[in-house]
Image 1 (cartoon, rainbow, N blue to C red):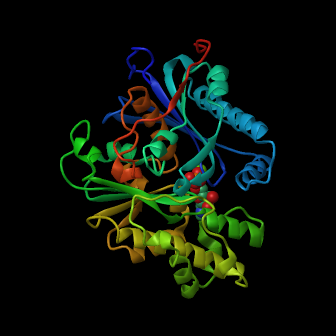
Image 2 (cartoon, helix red, strand yellow):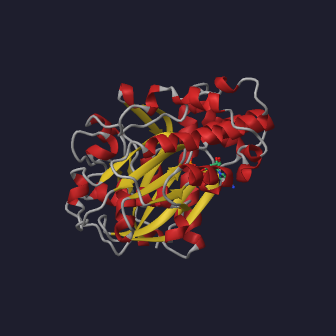
Image 3 (cartoon, protein in one colour):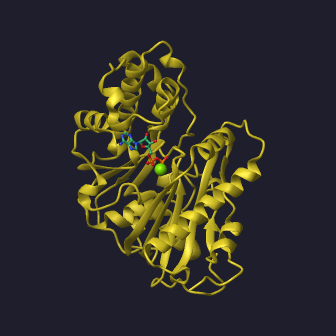
Length: 382
Ligand SMILES: Nc1ncnc2c1ncn2[C@@H]1O[C@H](COP(=O)(O)OP(=O)(O)O)[C@@H](O)[C@H]1O
Ligand SMILES: [Mg+2]
């Protein structure tokens, strides 16, 4: 997909955009990178969606809104707004940005049917901002027999080069996913990882999304701030066990999960607090299951995503996992920015036609590149 012989200018910024399954807003992150081992994060911004837009997104995801095209256009505008704001906040001109990695918003993810769908109009964004855009990161991986997710692992690997291993990076977003990185010297291109012996990644289970849905239904708030609701409730272990009977938890990785793979019916009759405590325990229990599926126990669990702010969840993880659990800030990363940074990194790799996934991260048959390039029709404003 390289731009007709053009070489990636790693003096420019790559900009990554993510709209996570929690549907909170757009995350935008700048990164200096060569698409390999050199990764140096820059400024970051989260632009929250208005409530009405969150609701429309939820309806699209639930299949109950007809006007998909309008939501897609508005979603793209929110992303354009996030790019403009990030650049203007930091006095960076669009001409200093070489590429945008535009993940879009996942409205359906059914790897068992070979289907995943992200909305977001790359051409509209490219023309609006005047910067080339890479979009559609997942479909090539699926065509190669992969799950199309998770895609942050190669970025985690690049960031983790100097850290003690084995290491687990646990992202607790709407869905939770883990990247396990083994020992062994990583070369600049990470070949031993590309052949799979040092890297394993998969969705562990529900992250925050199911809990958010419960809290919204029971209290009208959109999430359990600091785990306060869960802290006042009691965990119903039998219900956690019932959730864990889902065959997903015994399936061998790599594997990935739809945001709405689980529902709240098992919680019928519970108080708001007990339900929150039980769902928080479910997220933690699913991670404990994941721990049993990695090749060698990690020395450390580093947690990114909004779930790291839930102190009840973090305490449960700390009690149940054998190794220390800490937010990624403990090693100087930004736990809100990692996913967006990953799509900046992957956009550069896509331009170079390097793999975005490997068999052990998504189950693709071979290391697989991906992405579609949308060239901006006009030069960026300088
Ligand atoms: N202070 C907090 N206390 C508890 N949970 C939080 C807090 N801040 C964020 N969260 C949780 O994190 C979620 C957002 O996580 P995030 O990593 O942004 O998800 P996504 O990957 O979907 O973007 C929120 O929906 C909420 O459940
Ligand atoms: Mg988010």
